[in-house]
Length: 140
Image (cartoon, rainbow, N blue to C red; front, side):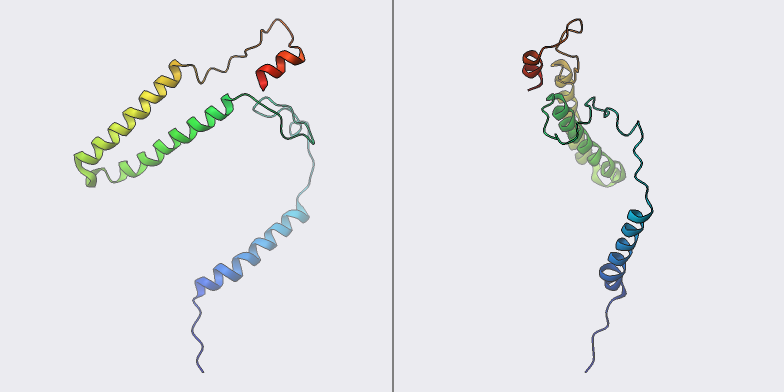
């Protein structure tokens, strides 16, 4: 009885790589030091203080808006790279379609700037400290 020959890439994919991954993860757990310094425990880049045990704090909607805008313009770049590579093959029609797509995105961006979607000014007066009811109304 003849057994089929196993492709070496399948052996690499299903046997060698998982073993290598487990070895490297184990070495990381054994050799890595857990030593948080003052920089690791300070306020995050977004401005929130790390509160251990509480992960569901409400925050401003502008963070969501920036994330959505990032995805839209990241998608634009995702389409721009293949266009630049295949511009000689798609002719004038393909280039015109992309210009229309780019103009629509640009109009949307100008509209967002006009409505001050990306304006991150604080709604609370800087001269007065917010009490808890004002703070809850603004944050959520």
